[in-house]
Length: 326
Ligand SMILES: [Fe+2]
Image (cartoon, rainbow, N blue to C red; front, side, top):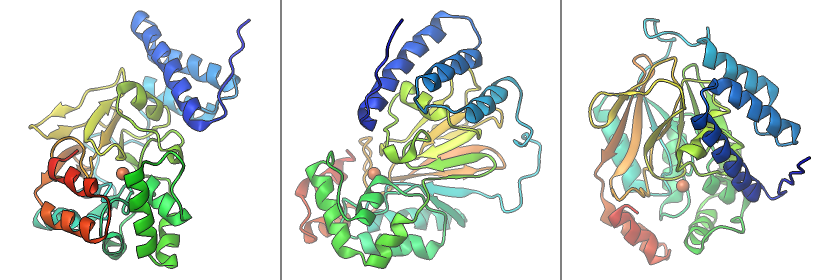
């Protein structure tokens, strides 16, 4: 008999689950058994151990999707739902007004009228109130990020680094109580017919897990019931595909074509503090009718963003990192 003790701390628990999932992935690779059956077995084991990794309802949806196409997901020949059109999806603006303006200018140039903000509007940069006002004026759906949550709450969590704390404290001072309440009331995630939207991960969205590897993405996929999911948080644009499902077609160096029967996770990168060594503002354009996603990069006035950071009295490294995109 094996007794497994799960850590009560959520971050330790997350690391522990990652370890179990790595083990599970090794089993999948070594075995020719069906992936859905294995995921089901592992999910049941986790649940029986009291870990709410994947409840029965989500598990049954997951398994049915892996064996037969879901009837509520239209095929590529279906007409788009009313209101469906290209959507600009952006995340991690982090109070960088010049970058946000450059992204919106690019969207206007391309005739895009719909937007979804994946959170972290504030923090780090020098112009949180201006960025927040623009997002509110757009009237677009927005999701809460970890910096938004900290600013709404009035303090940074214990494990936040020094520069991030400075950005959070500055944003708290710059925003009114009403603006902070607005941030705090943002939803954790959003779901549309063909895509889900979340800041960090669909698994416990406000635990703020980082998805850097395929193993990290596996956790979020357990909760994904749409062909696509868009996220941010790492500030690194990337596409992950669920094991055993269709790979996207790369149409050009930055445009992907996804299957409505597939299952993929798209990190849209960061508008205001990219960390992929590309200092340009980054976001994604999603065409739900064609199931295509373009990862976009736009030049912006980095010097103006740095100047705003220094003028606000924020740490110098928050400015210099913008110049190198890391
Ligand atoms: Fe962020």
